Image (cartoon, rainbow, N blue to C red; front, side, top):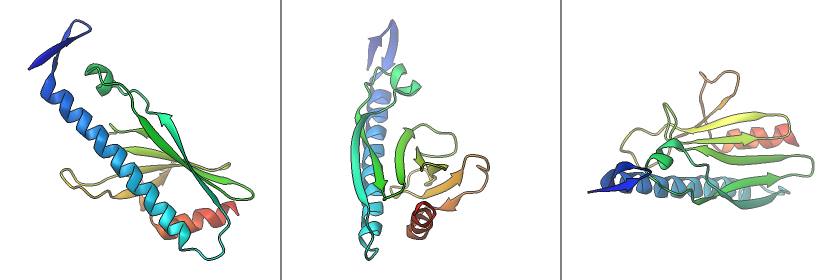
Length: 152
């Protein structure tokens, strides 16, 4: 089946697969944020404010090509007395990864990538700096604690 979009034929099956991929992306982001929030709850006497903010997803080329409208996704912001850590989903279609989330503080910019293997359902989040993207380290509770220490 095909439909016409901007004078081009669009494959309905491919469009449905892309929409499903976006649904999975939103689910994976929610699971990532839930995990971060759980790690924060495990830290005794931690004084942070956690906020999820609905934003309109960036319209990526694949979405434009198949006439798929952007959806609302969430940013996650962790506020301390002095600083913040903000998670901003940037792109789903990323070379070498299955999604990218930028992680910012006042002084740092990091890139969080889901490098899960094709066909796997569980995310495999790795984080890297902007200057040296060849080094990927696991994004885990210890990394989050180090990042919190850096901004406190």
